[in-house]
Image 1 (cartoon, one colour):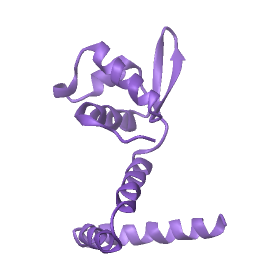
Image 2 (tube, helix red, strand yellow):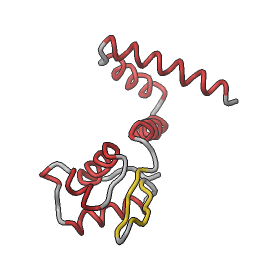
Image 3 (spheres, helix red, strand yellow):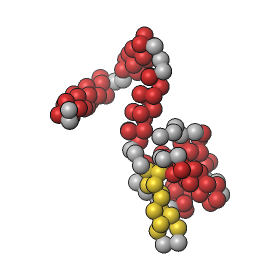
Image 4 (cartoon, one colour):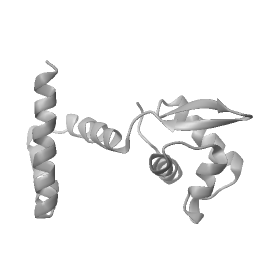
Length: 126
């Protein structure tokens, strides 16, 4: 999986994560007005995202239906892991501490619950 590059790709992926799937015109129509380029521009970006493994394409009538291959949460998780993998242990710990320190108490509580569930799931799959 290659990372999302640029604002238009970011907006198109965010739109597809919100919609679940879409044709070129559905995605184009759902984009914020600032990013609603020409049909062919959106189509080109969707095809590039599919070629890079972020979307699947399925024929739908005369057009194509684009579907994200991974969820937004999975994408963010993989991106964070790849970023942290290249950093020193001190930098990783400092960065994570800063992120966790910026969370509200209820967000931190939900995160702790999700981490326990992930740990259990990882333990049961071994």
